[in-house]
Length: 146
Image 1 (tube, rainbow, N blue to C red):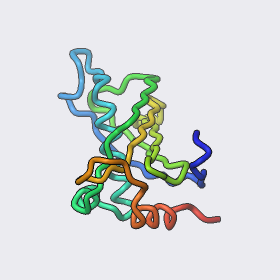
Image 2 (cartoon, rainbow, N blue to C red):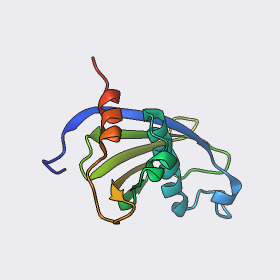
Image 3 (spheres, rainbow, N blue to C red):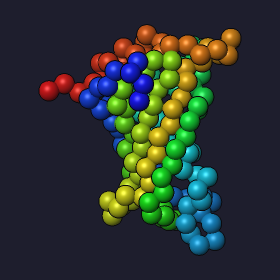
């Protein structure tokens, strides 16, 4: 972790996703390529819950492309599972923002851990920028207090 990022008390949300048949292979197991899509849905939910709709952010000229993706598969998710995706933020963003994910099934079994690093990019110039002030304010306001 870079020393340029300030650690915070974790801000987390939980999203629910039911595994669809089309996301599985012939054995009924979720294909490995689907997990980044689950992470994306959970991340969009996280931003919405914080008060920032992803479309508004893009309308304001800010994009968040993925710079890094890490997935640690523990157990397979299967067709019909109801997944809970916990999305957490442990540090204030700079020019990038790092999300951690934990996926559990309806039996509370840990299935997958993941992390994405996304970079704030100016839509017009396609260059990295620091986290916009309105987004930073929403994050700071959401930090759990004792």
